[in-house]
Image (cartoon, helix red, strand yellow):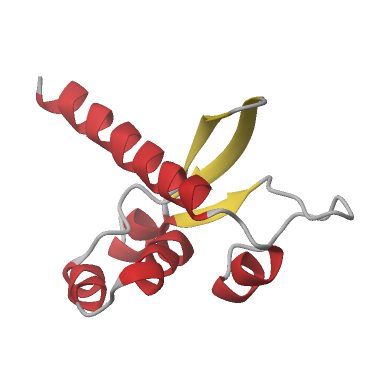
Length: 110
């Protein structure tokens, strides 16, 4: 298997984001093997929102978040900022990916 195939391999994930008015479900596809030494080096030099956006752009392949015209919002810094996706939702997506990935590792090692 080529390393590029491993890095670009993707996995489906369903996130239930809790809000004051109920559950907001996000279906997404992410790259479990995206974290490389280069990824860590580039991430180290980023702060705040740039750090969050970098991780989202690199790790998330697709999601079903839609704009007001029912069009899927692209997973890009520009689209995320233009559509005003809440930071807490973005953080929850990253946490769900990290948690899903961690559980997968424990199952293999346990």
